[in-house]
Image (cartoon, rainbow, N blue to C red; front, side, top):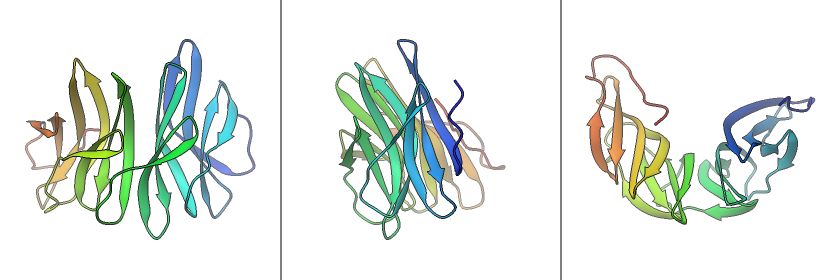
Length: 188
């Protein structure tokens, strides 16, 4: 699918195919402001949001419902998500946050991301688990649910290097690298 030409810059951040229909999310920039958008078979929809600008980060389609995670700028970035173009909030406690990935299974909406230095897992907008304690920088980039288990991948710094990690059901499942060189797990 070729996306329509726009007289702005645009970035596609995620793709999902449901019953042969291609969905892509991302954002457009008019030279100064990022606007979250998604395309269904190349037709653009601008997502409405509370804030000054935003970026759609991940898309998932289930039973004809479109789920999109994002980060919205409003006195710093705030993690948000949409269900069928209706903006939803996440349970947040501190400040700057990012929703990096979204996955739907068994009527639950799973979101991974970070708030401050803490990698997080949200379920249906509520905080399910802090994956890290926040002593070092960390992030949760991708999420996948299977047979009742929820897997998240990302990284946590050891103070010198980023260490690629996988969490299962909110707890550390596996450290993928030794911490002597930078490494990040982006997809699971």
